[in-house]
Image (cartoon, rainbow, N blue to C red; front, top):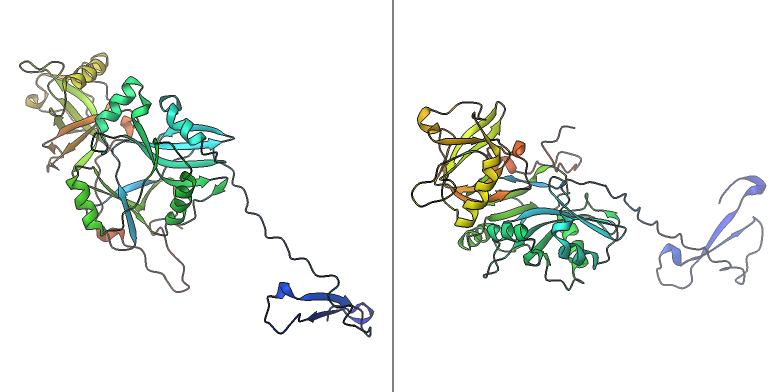
Length: 394
């Protein structure tokens, strides 16, 4: 009964048959009070079902920052999946109005360096999207080779570069950042299913125990693994929902100087390394192995124009440490793997991996792994509010 007095109307619902049916499957008519309803009047007209609301199309950001992983000492408890930690360059792909642009993690446009990868993405015919992944170069065993990637960029040979995609914060006009990581990845995998290009690949997750995955990665001489907490959203910052486990200590350093070569060696003997802290650049040791003749020549050519008369370090070295050193402007960044940090903050058994042109010197710090205990998910309080980021100030 709806309304009052002379304006009253009745809603009559008549079952079509004895079967239980959804409400939308009933015939609904309106009649004035005291009117006679015959079977002939029932069912005319049938109410139209309301159309389902369309999903709102997200506005694609002009620029976008990737989610970064937190270094940890061991795998934490909880529900995680693990992928290979690719030894390459982080790369974000923006697809808008049919145009593909490729950006480094710091927003540098590298589309011209990766023309084949951009063309392969364009062939997917996706609508407005931001895709996240890593470009790598694979060796004869099918494993990532960072030096080979450097060489490929140096000679402009993008045919040797594979783009592994692992997330899609925006896909086909939809903002997926609040969707669980497993749902975002499933949508990305489906979008890549139609690709015929060997230059685009989906980064698969492993279902084995995290300890077995990590040990296998280290046995294959991979850099390590990346863990992602199931159910977590995508955030454009460093997050505890993404973690990295490294097989061997490895990070970037600012190059602040070099020593003279000894014997038959050309170019330089060793590179002096530093990291940034609150006071400025701090000495972190030196690296003299891991170079071949080509890299010695190439790096030396980059060092000589940057020479300066004084040390860029905040705290001066001892006379023994500074003997024979040529200081340079602290603008070049190199990646180094090593056995450990000493108590004095100097690396031991260091070996050079390669130069990094995708990371500015000002962002290079001493990476400190978090303990697994600090990575535990916050417990749900009464009211069942899921706290996904316990460190966020609300």
